[in-house]
Image (cartoon, rainbow, N blue to C red; front, side, top):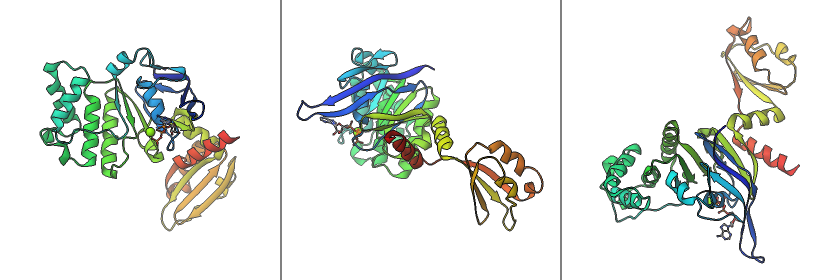
Length: 317
Ligand SMILES: Nc1ncnc2c1ncn2[C@@H]1O[C@H](COP(=O)(O)OP(=O)(O)OP(=O)(O)O)[C@@H](O)[C@H]1O
Ligand SMILES: [Mg+2]
């Protein structure tokens, strides 16, 4: 597996001996190339500190980080050429137009003068703001400002995009639009790291995730791996939908290995098991007499609240 980001025993201590805050306490994080990686953590857990170290805005107290093969502390110029960061609470010049803002930022990004406007218009097009290119940013809604933030991040055609809490203060529609943009950028082969304190967001767009708490990673891996380890510890859940008015015989399911609990409500039967019995359940419901009774069989993923609670409990052990 090729990695876009790899950190090793990253530690960051703010302040002096008296005011010492250990913001990062030994982070080993691996972000695979072409993933959408969610860094989930509550307020103050160290997300912004970690991100700032990755782009060379902050030096670690100890440990190291490699970003696209470059050392974050030594080669930050190379990293900034290839990596875009949309910082927390990023702002634009309100009295300037969207296009003027982007052309200015393209200058800071080192885009050659004769390409700035073209790149800015391309980026505006990608986020659906081309028709507002010449409108002042003061007339933009929060959702539009955020899309302009994404446009800013696309100016240098980055391999890796880092978004720090991108959907804070954005309405559900704006957040959904943002997720679509992320999916599109990812389909173009770009790696995306996004920090969030919203659990459901991880489940909605991320292929991989890490949970950070008090400067430590409680877990990281592909979203499927995280689901699986929680299921293995807490049980597998399946939902069987029964045709209205039909009665589902439950004896056979009850005798399957590892079944812990079966609950029935209206036309839903929920089965909780210790083992993965998806295959046996499937062959059961596709034969008589079940196949005329059952409408659907679905494995139920654990919720992100469950996943978070599980890894917090594991951490305390
Ligand atoms: N410049 C600083 N000086 C001293 N302490 C700091 C500084 N920046 C952050 N901290 C502390 O380091 C810890 C981690 O902060 P950080 O901003 O990285 O967390 P975060 O996960 O981004 O939080 P949020 O979700 O609120 O943005 C916190 O305890 C914070 O108070
Ligand atoms: Mg932060």
